[in-house]
Length: 130
Image (cartoon, rainbow, N blue to C red; front, side, top):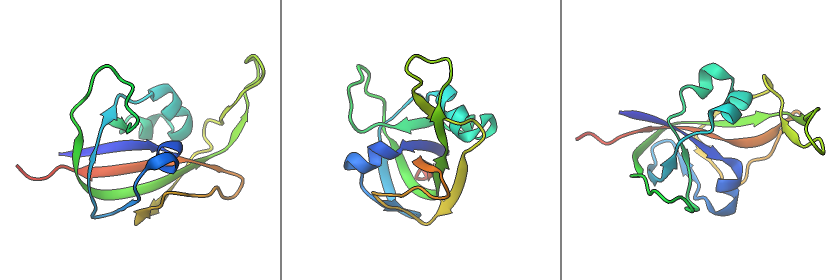
């Protein structure tokens, strides 16, 4: 069984462990925020995300970890802009601005490029055979 996991940039930058295609991983995942992921990834790609990596805890339930071999990694970048109509005009992702770049490894620090900010990794994990 394959699982697609979203990993926020701040999770990796805070205390994540770099990984690569072929790495064995065991991650706690929680339900994805589909509204936010749709803004960043678009509806079609956001719908493929099974869970969000969460290694800081703070959740009352402790879901079973996703374990397996990393089979694909994409760095995700998007543009941020002020959100009109919101108090204080906070910045948010600009829908349709997300880009995916295939990688062979996920470093702890990833920079932005072409006016886009790095927001996270989209990671495919294959479960071990039973």
